[in-house]
Length: 234
Ligand SMILES: N[C@@H](CCC(=O)N[C@@H](CS)C(=O)NCC(=O)O)C(=O)O
Image (cartoon, rainbow, N blue to C red; front, side, top):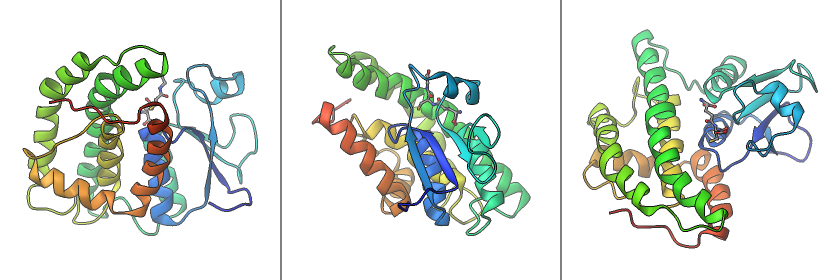
């Protein structure tokens, strides 16, 4: 990011894994972007107009339109695909047709299954409770970690196998999405991955990338103010 206005602005918050996913794509491609905060739970009318699903992120390309719905795209997957077309290098979607399809599926799997379990089942029952002055719902979070996460993590671990990346032998949208969405859990809890060695190693490699580490550090700094310690879910 620079001091001058970037063409791309993301409306949302770095606490959202989907905002961090788009941020990571921009950082990998060295595309300037701004993040403009929006309270998605009490959004202003202008945001409702550009976010028909009332979700963050929504992206605006200011080179197309500076206001209104023109120039805006909601949904992290649509936004990332747009950025790939506009800034093709380095490619974050495999060239090979089958690998491309696999990458899109892993992105979708992380965006839906992993995000629903990790976000609704762990992050929200802990963090939202604490910010509302309530006790964190550790029973729900522990139940989710014990029952919902294992089949999802097993699928990701076995899919990865001996490979460094999820699809096409290169960093892709699949790796970025899995890392950003899984790291949502580690904002509030310890995430031991001893039973999933391939995924554990992938996660460590991804965490070492500035595109993943930078946006995560911003989210972590924000979360730690309300929640100094991570919980043990085991
Ligand atoms: N599929 C969407 C999911 C976006 C999403 O669920 N964002 C959450 C924040 S992490 C949100 O806006 N939630 C608002 C709500 O639940 O009302 C994407 O990839 O952008």
